[in-house]
Length: 87
Image (cartoon, rainbow, N blue to C red; front, side, top):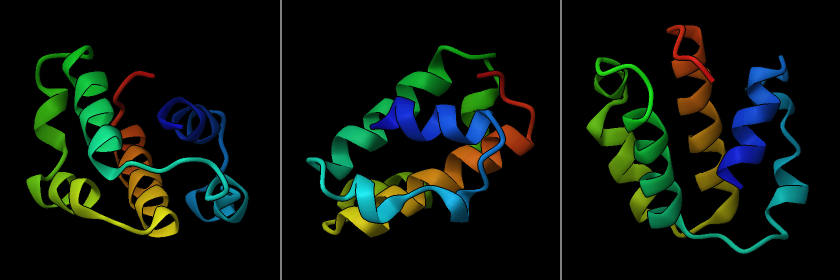
């Protein structure tokens, strides 16, 4: 799921255009998405991991609703893309 949302955003899809209603039909785990986001950032440039706010990671990790969690992830990845974090 992380890769799907990331790749959509990096191909130019706007965060509000991601089909969250369709994606929510797939299994959801906020802690796994938070871990995957941090793992991705850890594999980018050393300073990139500092661009994500701890509150966003916490919110994603504790989110129980798929639609909200995927929206939080989409916004975070979109913000990181805007900060020139490489795909």
